[in-house]
Amino acid sequence: MLEAGKFLFKVQKYMYCERYMVAMDTPAYAELVKHPAPACILNFPLAILSLIPREKTGTVEDALKTASEYFQLVMFWLENLLIIPIFFAYELLLVPFAYLINFITLIKTLQEKDTSVEGDEKNTEPVKIS
Image (cartoon, rainbow, N blue to C red; front, side, top):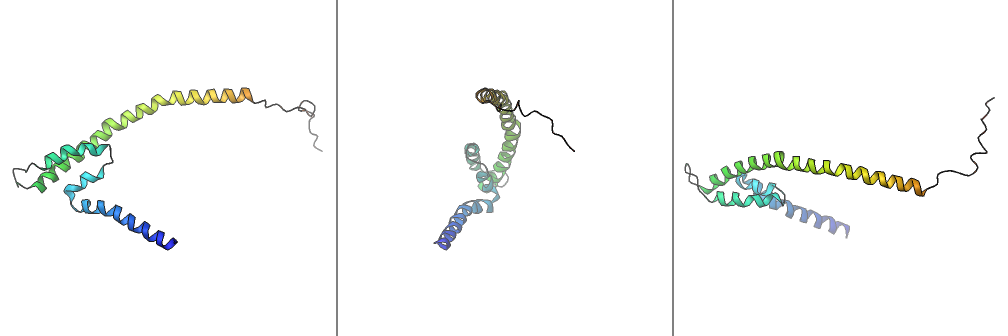
């Protein structure tokens, strides 16, 4: 049973990777599969641009390759200039709330617990070292 499970895992892993290996063999199509789900919506204009042949060579493959290069640059700058600073600002906005919630939790915990131990007042004699 364990061997069958390992084999099926390897089969499923190969089938998953094969989808990307086929696209990565052609550099023009590689850009279409590199980006995760929300960003892949931006591939729609790339697909339309790929259907317009270039004037120099006139092939759709060259048009797709050129459109992929431009799309790669757009995605790079979109991620670095827009998404990262917006996410960083969002995290900075959450910091005061996180500290406030932790502080309130700490105060409530200290008020609910009585940390004193009975009998501590009696055993306050200094320890004699001989």
